[in-house]
Amino acid sequence: MRIESVTAHAFGPLHDRTLPLAPGLTVVSGVNESAKSSWHAAIRAALCGEPSSRHRPWHGESWRVAATVSLESGEVVAVDRDLNDDSSPDVARRVGMDRTSFAATACVDQAQLLNVLDAADGLQDHLRRAAATAGTDGTVEQALQRLTAPVDALRDARNRLREAETDLAAARREHDRYLELSTQGRSAAAARARLAVQEHAASLDALSARALG
Image 1 (cartoon, rainbow, N blue to C red):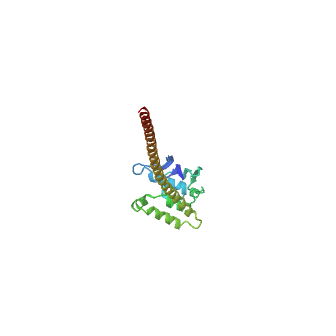
Image 2: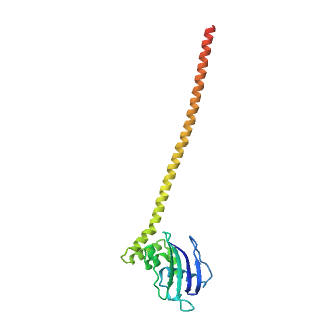
Image 3: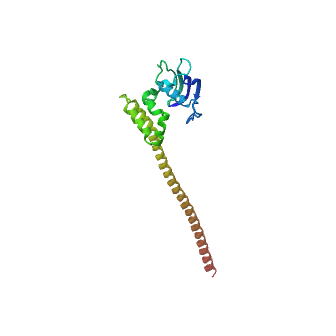
């Protein structure tokens, strides 16, 4: 799943502003109080709903965010969420998760960032915690499998590539040896032919000498 863009129609200090997200990594930078955290919260609210009340709009009664999401299947999903009366579909369900587990695994709050950086297993703890509290429908387990499956497939593909490269190098060495032996064989055959001609000429010379004697 890839988030194409998020639009804050009315969210905290943001009003009718759209943040496009590039493929790969998008870095949102700015000075303090430039709405970086508000954009992060707006993305999470657009996908999962249930924002904190501290992100209510600074002006007016409307509280609304929207997002465009591309799924792995190629389907593009547009969400327009009225946070005062949230009845929009849960985007997390489209990737086999509920909004609680999605928020716990796909979003890292600023206060949690150092935990992820300082502890190698910190993110795994978040995944385990989400899996333990996701209910009995199995959707989080499926999502965890989807998270690990590409990694396993990539590792297997790299192993197969290394094996293929090793086999290719061995085949090239055998081919080079074959070419070397072929060259040597042709040289030996040519030498034998020259020797046979020389021996034949010597025999003729000896016969001619006896005939003349």
